[in-house]
Image 1 (cartoon, helix red, strand yellow):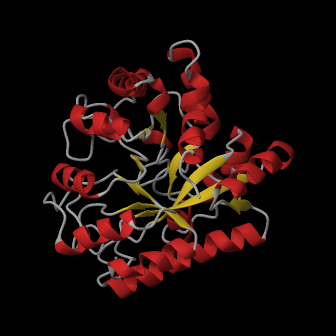
Image 2 (cartoon, helix red, strand yellow):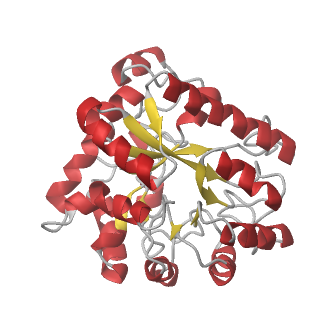
Length: 332
């Protein structure tokens, strides 16, 4: 299982055809990051389930001048991505999972056909135009919501807006609390937003793709206290494999660190809350590519190389069983 992949974003915003074999996609993409993920590559890796994002990219005058500027634009952006997932499901390329019965049915079918299952995760809540629109998205199949990305009108995030929850954000927490079909993703929340969310929201919680701030000192990552808080909620933390999030000060073009860099983040989380709370949230192709992954990662199947670095017996949990147990604990 992989708890964070920007599949629709890479198709609709980056122009990648994820229905192709990975080698063919790489042959066609001659510029930019080297792609790491396609649907056939996930099947070849034996991926049973991924958390597939709805990610509307916000406007920034320098970094993203074509991004959304209004909640209505973000709403339409996410709907287009959701429609892609639905089309893929209609074509038999993925199976959308929204409840526990559907999860178990998918896993039985996956044993026979290898089709990847997808649970929809909204990364950044701006597509929810007002907090009372949460039910619309949950009815549409969203099961995981991360309120902020870099920071927005709901919450301080991990780059430009490090403040706490806004008034709208507090209303969103109340709406999430009243909606048992959805869980809160703490990844990308600023530290202040995180603690205000913990205080106001008592439902299921995860960090789909976050690392330990002990090793990379940035608001994007989790302090020990934040890790413990997620563990106390029974949540799981997915390790993200971008080198700059694994090794302090790493820059593009520098030599790639080895998988040990990822292992130490996992081990630190495990020391605080147990190996049963550690998972994978690779964020492959989430603004970086194969050249920005630790050696020797090159594609989803290579995640199995972690087994040689982890303590005996914990690898099946990290590879997916921990996420499955967490899902089964709260999915309707």
